[in-house]
Length: 363
Image (cartoon, rainbow, N blue to C red; front, top):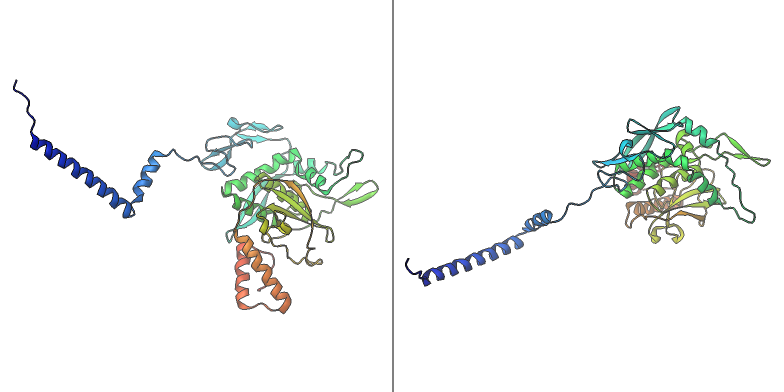
C-alpha cells in the first residue's frame, strides 16, 4: 500500500467551510431573535418542559377522585363515580351514584344567577325526606355552667350539621363545574343566594315559655326557595367556606340585620376588618353597604363582626369594588338633588345589567 499523504489545501478548505458554517448559524440565530422569532424558543421550551397538571373546579387533578365522594375529575368536570371513589357514610352505591334513605319526595328547583352581564339558571334537586329530618333537630344549645353564649354558636350549629353537608355539597360541585375560575365561583354562589326570594317562615319554636320565629337551616332555605337575611347568610357562609374562602358575618343590632363578610383586601373591607360586606337579601354588589332598606333605611355604620373561618381572600382590583363605589356616589347625588343626570343614568343601567340588581333608579 502507498503512503498516506495529507493535502494542506484540503485542510485549509475544510477550515474555511467550518468557519463559514459557524458564522452562518450565528447570523441565523441573530435574525431569529431580532425579528421576533421567539416562537422558536417557545416551541423548544414546550417540547422540553413537562406537561402542566390540569384540574377540575375544586382543584382535583384530572383522572383522580375528589375529596368529596363520590366525585371523579374527568375532562374538567366532577362526575359521580361511586364504583371508584366510594360514598359518604350513610349512603350506598347504586349505578355509580350514592343514595340515602333521606332522598325521598324529590323536587327540582331553579336557581338563578348573574355572571358577566348574563343571566343563567341551574337546576338542583332537593328532597323533602331530608327536610323532614333536619326540621326536627332542636334549635336550642346546651351550655356548660359559666359559659357565655354567642350568636356565632347558633350560626355554627346551623352550618356545621354533618348530614346537611352531604346534601349541600352537590350544589358546591355544581358551581365548581360551571367554572374553574375561583372568583367567578364566588360570584355565582353570591348571586344564587341573593336571587332566592326574601321571606320568613310561618313556623315558630318554643324556648321555655316563649315562642319565637322558626329559623331555617341552609338546606331548608333551598327547599323552600325562601329565607330571611340570617337564614340566607347561613347558606352563603356554607357555600363560600366550602369554596375555601375566609368568611364572617356582620350583625346590626339596631336593625336586627345580618350580612356576610368575605375575606378581601383591607382597603376594600368594611371598617378595615379584612372582610368585605355582602348583602344576601337581594342582588347587590360586593362592598355595597349603603343600600336603603324598606322600613329601615340605611344600616348603622359599625356592626358587630363574628369570624366563622379563615381562608382565601378576594383579590385586588376587582370590578365590584369600583362599581360599588360608583353606585354609592350616584345614590348620594340623588339623595342631595333628587335628580339623576343622563350620564349617571347610563352608568346605572350598565351596572344593573351587569349584576342583575333589584334596585332601579332609571326606569
